[in-house]
Amino acid sequence: MSKIVEMNKRIEKDVVGGYKAIENGVVGGYKAIEESVVEGYKSIEDKFIGAFLAKEGESVEDARARMSGADKEVK
Image 1 (cartoon, helix red, strand yellow):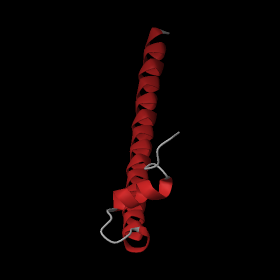
Image 2 (cartoon, rainbow, N blue to C red):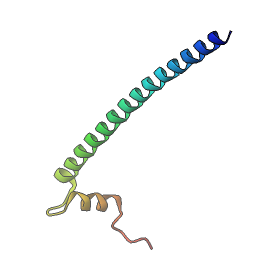
Image 3 (cartoon, one colour):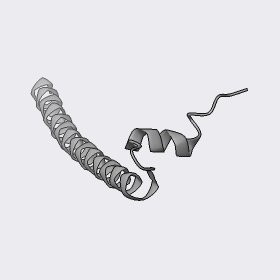
């Protein structure tokens, strides 16, 4: 009986390892895609702000702060 138990434990270990490898691959792929999409969006957003919303001589960061109200003092 012990050989069967040993064999089942070995199979269990291999199956769990396989699932973990798949899980890590899927999660890693998702994270890479997510980061790429977010960076692409930020790049487009910066270009839009620079072209249409920034005042003459104003940086993109300054325009973003001005529009969000971050440059106003809280009273």
